[in-house]
Length: 449
Image (tube, rainbow, N blue to C red; front, side, top):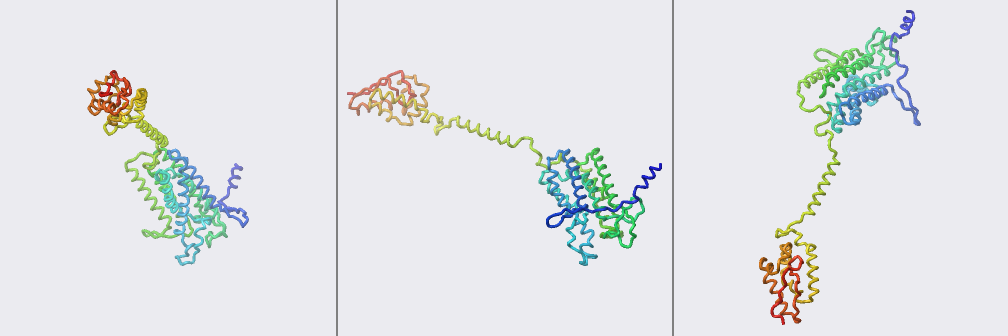
C-alpha cells in the first residue's frame, strides 16, 4: 500500500512545459533550425498517409495512386491552413483592427505555428481533386478512405501546439493542468507564473484518436460510400472542436451571430457540423445509380491488353493482304487476270516457237501476225481445256474472229508471198491454242507452186 502511495506521489500534478522546441543542424553558412512543431506535422502526415494507403488498396484503387494524390493535397492543405489561420487571427499580421501595425513577414513563417484545419481541409480537398482526376479515381471514394487517416494525422500533429506552448485553455486546478513558461510570449499577462491551463491540445488529440477507432468500426459494419464516411468525419471532429475551441483563451477573431459573440472557429465548426450532417442524410437517401468502384466512369482498367489487340489487328490485316494477292482480279471483259498475264502463256509461246523453228517456214512465222492479238489471248483462255478437239471442229465452233476464215487465209496469203513454196509443217499447233498438237493436220495452202 505504501508503494502504491509512493508511486502516486511521484506522478506529477501537472503536465510540465517542454524542455525543447527543436534542434539545429550546423551548415557551412550557419545552421538550420528544425522545429518540433514541424516534426509533429510531418509525423502526422506520414501516419495518416500510411493508414489511408492501406484502406485505399483494399478498395481496389490503382497501386501508388495515393501518393500521386498526396503530392497535390498536402501542399494545397498547408497553404490553405496557413491562410485560414491568418484570417482567423489577423492581429499579429495586420495589427489590431487592421491598423497596419502588424508584421506581414510573419505570414509565411509556418514554423512559428498557426494552421487552421478548415482551410487545410478545404484547399487540401481541391488539391486531392486535381490528383484524383489525374489518377482517374473518384474524389468521394478517396475522401472516404482518407477520413480515419486524416483524424490520425490531426491527433499527432496537434502535439506541435504543446512544443510551441500555444493554443491552451483557461486556468485550471486539475491534476493534468498544463504548465506554460512565464517568459513565453504566449503566457497570458497578469496571471501568476505557476498558473496551470487546460491542455486543449491533449483533449483534441485524444478526441481524434477515439474518432479513428469509431470511424473504422462504423465503416466495417455499414460500409459507407460516396463520401458519407467523410461526412461522418466532419460531424465527429466539429462536435469535439466546438467545446474544445470554446475553452481556449488565445487571441482570435470574434464573430457576433444571433446575438452571440464567440470565436470564428466555433461558428465555423457549428456550420460545418450542420452541413456535414445534412449531406450525410441526403447521400443516404439517394439511390445508387453507379457501381461501387473507385474509378471514374471510363477510366476503369481494361481487361484486354491493348498490345494484344494491336497484334491481332496486324495479323488480320496481313491475312487479308495475302488473300487479296492469291485471289485473281478480273480484267475489263470479266475474265480472270491470269488469262491475260504474260507469264500464263509462256509455255504456249515456247512450244509454238519450237514448231516454227523445225518447219523453217517463213509463212508459218507470219501466220500468227494476221490473227489479232486479243483474239489469240482470248482463244487461249477459252480453248485451254479443249486441246484435243480437231482443227475442223474448232473452226466450226469458234467465232469468226478467232477461227475459220482467219486461219484459212493466213496460209494462203503466206504461200502467195512465199518464193520458196515450202509447205507448212504437219501437225504444227494452231495459234491461239494452249500449245498442244491438234488431232487433225493443218491443210496446205492453196496455189503453192
